[in-house]
Length: 144
Image (cartoon, rainbow, N blue to C red; front, top):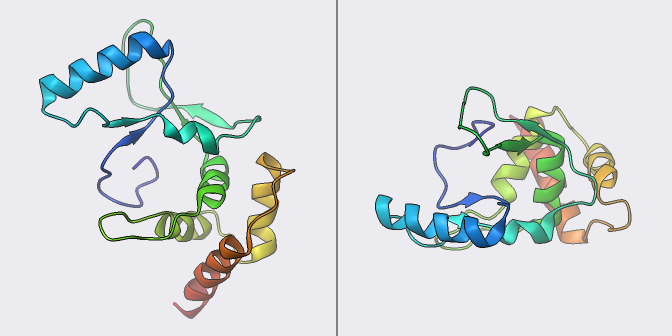
């Protein structure tokens, strides 16, 4: 949503600290706003790199004690490449986001995407299925 690639999402990927207190507040907000209890998804942590690249969210004053940051486009692309979930019924997966970010960042080759990925995950080679998703996304944009 931060980069304007789509209008909605079913949850918000977030890391919240301290997690025990945050979990209670997340459930409280879910009840007050009629949201599912898992509207905040902290499972995103499995796709995080040791070295992150993020920036403060623009345009919002959230009060004392609350900082909101978002991943840079490069870091978000690297995480999406690491996850690379295929679309399933009811779940868009990561392919469309990968395609959007490659186009937004003007990356037009597998090698260019690998350079971004390696900045964040230097010891974790891209699986072939991810490489193929990148090739398809690049090819799709060359045709359009």
